[in-house]
Length: 393
Image (cartoon, rainbow, N blue to C red; front, side):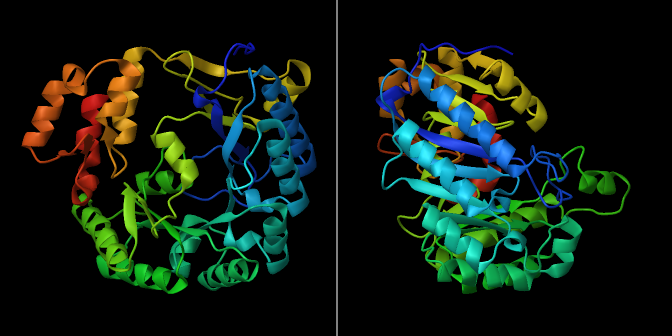
């Protein structure tokens, strides 16, 4: 753990902002994120602490910055009253120059929102809502430990539209225990009926330490095999593509012009400051980038913040090789792929001089394609992305 110094500013004088809200009504059975249903910390006290961090961190940045996006993730940020969300947005505008047209996203659980709270979030300045629906099957929702039903999910979408949200994302999970391809196709049908602007469709994994993982170890649940999972993945791209959605990342689809601007920041290695317990940060200085995260436990985070100010855990300055590797294994997650000209500008070397053998092998196996200055994984083969990304780690 170390204290930062006022010696660095985000590259290109712009950055994105992330705020972690580690509170939940109930911890989901599959979730290994930094969140808790019984922290014992009031929402008001936590928000006060995060705003203090935002103010202290702003003093460490040299020069004026321009905030591009703000993302409230969790946990369940929709547990916050709209007036507390408004405090975050106001601080971001005052301290980080958050642009008037910035994308401001709030993650929400359908079981924690009302027409009134959604209207309040919209009035506070949130202009993009990400709803964690996960499934339209009540049996699956119960297995996953979600606190909402399929009917409540639909009601939340209607309420969000009624509150004026015209940029709505929905998260769904496939490859659930016992799920068949036909059942997943039905999930996609119900999803498309709601007409979201953005869709994230992930395959379930049993993360070690979660209740669902323990149940799997005991033989209580089993996931569809890899062949069936791949079939569901391909079906997702097929069904959503036919409905007018573009796949722009391994698990993300959007209407034209409605990609998540914030998420692309991560994959393109742009600067992002994270605030709150367990939040991760990345600045593209010096000169190839630095990563760190905040204390994981909310109580520890607030205690240290109140005594020592901002601190950084596992702070790591990236080498040139680290950054080149990241450019590939993050950039190739996106259908746009890696811009080889940008790579040359940043690192002063052609991609062929660094990864020539790997690129030739992947091109020969048709796992990589070249279009002009871009290298990318063909969209139908993104299901095999791990076989490609591992070459650059």
